[in-house]
Amino acid sequence: MAKKRSEPADPIDFETALKELEGLVEKMEQGDLNLEASLAAFERGIQLTRTCQDALTQAEQKVEHLVKQGEQEQLAPFDSDET
Image (tube, rainbow, N blue to C red; front, side):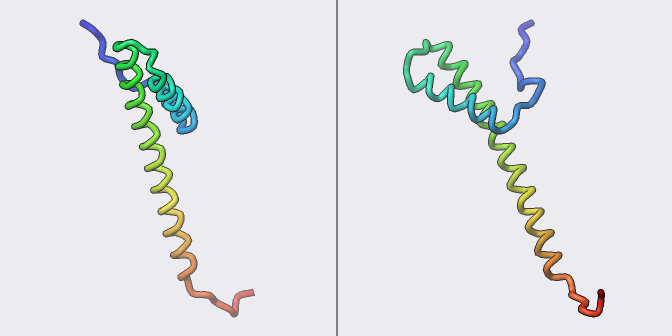
């Protein structure tokens, strides 16, 4: 039974995934890849795109959470008698 190719065991960071994705796009744009290599590059590109999108989504959620925390802190009453 053939083993299905899945996501890499060790997740890669955003910058590494983006750099690899840019390299794949460049190779594909050159038009020197045969059909099988193009399909493999496209498949890997989709995986990398998902990795990058997930990282961006997580970063966006973290920023939103931090901004909300900051807004709550700003709305806290100020006690001028404390010294």
